Structures are given as C-alpha cells and as structure tokens.
Length: 128
Image (tube, rainbow, N blue to C red):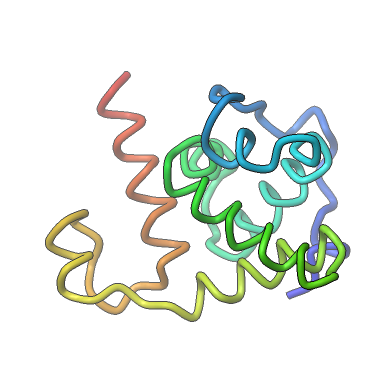
C-alpha cells in the first residue's frame, strides 16, 4: 500500500472532521490538516469502506489510537504519508480476538482497521 499514490480523491470529496478537539484530528494537532485527507483515503482504500464510515472511525477514540500509531512513525523519522501507510498496514495485520469480538461485536479474525471502521459507522448511524 502506498498512500501517496492512493490519495487521488479531490478535497471536495473528503468529509471534514466533526471532532476537531479529539479523535484523529485532535491527536495530530498541527499536522491534522495535512494528515486528514491522506488518512481518509488510505483507510477507505485499505478497508473498502466509504469515506463517511472512515470519518466516523477517525472522529472516534479509535481514531485517536490510530493517530498515536501515525505519531510513533513520525517520531521514527518517516514522512506523513509513510507514517499513515505504516499505521494502515499494522492495523490491517492485527486481527480481532474473542475479547474484541465480545466487547465490540466485531467478528473474530477480522482486521482491526476494517472492524473498527465498520463498528464506528454502526455506532454513528445508531446515534443519529
């Protein structure tokens, strides 16, 4: 996965955050404006989920955890796009176990990134 090639969506297609103080945006702070469209596109492409679902994920506490992973990669000297790409790969390699399945209703064995994007979409729809 190479997010610099994947990120082909126009800025008008990318939904804006509804949680600028927390989640992914709040954790990324001064880099949030640049990181948001890259992360939105990379996660949508990796999980095959719509951008609105990805927005729900990034605006959630799970988005904050994803941003922590991106920040770790930035501290290791990687570019923003490389850091997001690495976080996507890491979250796609991790799979849900029985506890995550029980706690969140995500099927066992599903990639964490896909599972939590879908989980956040469902929670967002239920709250509406």
